[in-house]
Image (cartoon, rainbow, N blue to C red; front, side, top):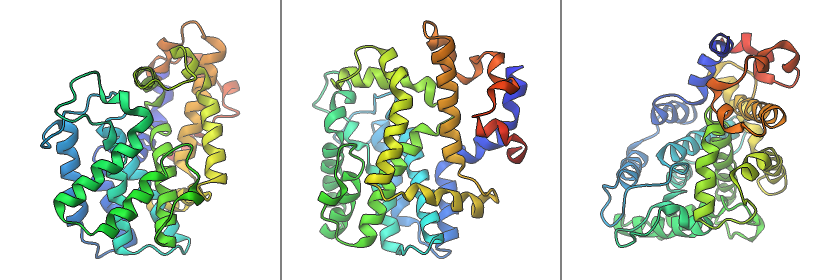
Length: 319
């Protein structure tokens, strides 16, 4: 029954997380700027792949299971979607700004990568300082490539917007475009991970990173699992108070890109939260078994569980 119930989401899954992320990023950018030159961001993207795979001189291979290359790609895709939606709503985004925004998304978690002379543990030990380390890597990379200092400053400001406790008004943006794209990156980082079809089953890996990184507040894995719905509520509040509600641009992106007048990312997150709340209520002592979407009990898909499940309610529009 579970496989049959999941069938309506196959097209949805392909829309939210296409197999070739950068191909979809390119399609979105071409909707925004048909004559866009992709050479700069593709150069950076190839270098980021090398970095995460251990082929970038001076750095070790990525060894964090949650903050991996896939997460960086997810964030980059969400950035492109949000930027597209912003442009549709009359916000001004230049070719240069879009390049630097995409590059910032690609750079945003490079702080988890260890240097060659750093053999202890994993990059997760830098969880609490990874934003600063990402900025440090970006500065080094821009210096190696002889990119202008002003371009680094633009990216640094965007990267700072991904810090969960950062006050946006304390960042010295160099332009209104810089401020907009920084807020977009802050939202993309959160939406990119939480809308992932496999988000729930990745949470144990996130807890492992938090443990190594000495992130306070979670004594056990279950603490993190149980508080994840609260984190979504916190994220939505941050969207409103610090990040300018730029998440609202996603709906227009999906309308133009896919002909669906809905925010599919938000629906994916709400679906994940619906699944998680069901697991916490019914299987608190055996929660791990059900974090994988393929292991959800049949009862979850029965009609009386659909009242708060937007994706199920609208499944005919997705198939």
